[in-house]
Amino acid sequence: MTVSSDLPLDDLVQPFRIDPFALRGRLVRLGPTIDRILSQHAYPEPVAAMLGEAITLSVMLAGALKYDGIFTLQTKGDGPIRLMVADVTSSGELRGYAQFDKQRLDRLGDGTMIVPRLLGAGYLAFTVDQGSHTERYQGIVELIGATLVDCMHHYFQQSEQFDAAIRVAVGAPRRAGEAWRASALMLQRLPPGASAADEVEEGWRRALALMASGRNAEMLDPALGPNDLLYRLFHEDGVRVFTPSRVRAGCRCSRERVERVIRSLPTAEVEELKVGGRLTVTCEFCNSGYEFSEQDLAALRRPDA
Ligand SMILES: [Zn+2]
Image (cartoon, rainbow, N blue to C red; front, side):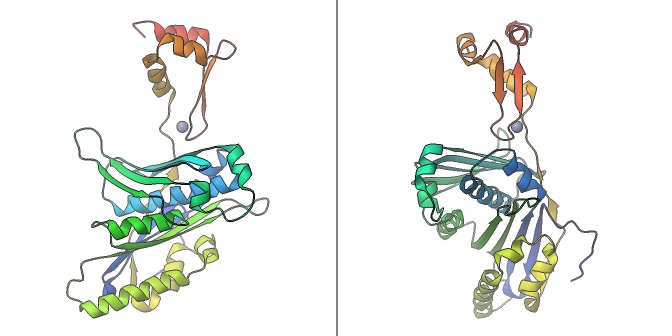
């Protein structure tokens, strides 16, 4: 395997295969993209970290499915974090947000920020939307386990589509000048083909052990390129890498979309939402604000608008 310096090191999905063990995998590396998405909101750190895990998982799972449209991962629970949504388009535009109850979050105090405490009882669901007139792929699993990764493993155990294992690392900025980073690894078993079943079973266990042997600091290290990390973990087993795909922070909101929503609302409801004669609509995903004056709103209400 050669490592070329002009390859991107961040904000990518790097597919790979370990042929002797009939395995394929993906490494997700998120740098400026995850930092931008999480920094657009002033989330308390436990919320940002949990959303970071959800966003990274969405990139990982989206990479495992062939689709042309939008992949959405969502959690809903009765804990302090009520809702998280992350979505990624097949062209690699990524976004996400969380809704949480600050008072309930504050009451948690310190301690480990695990799924049962932060999200409570609920579910994690993902869907692939390829537009109307196409079938939606949907997976759903209860929030069981300490981390979202544990919940996904629970899903994999029930799933016929995925025979897989994942790990996710999310790193919060610890000093001035540092940024959020995230990384994920997924190993997926392929039909064994010509290889002997024993060898493949042994290879799966070995690959899982190697995946677990990587430290979070290595997964998040901006100086350690994705191929170098894969080589460090799997070089003895003949890892082969393929062309990576890029992801970037991107939102699909626009003034036109907001105008469509306003037009669909009853006038009385729009009036109630106004503050000081103006209506401000904020996109939950990217925190962009769209302002509408009385004149703007009157123009929207005209039948020919
Ligand atoms: Zn937006």
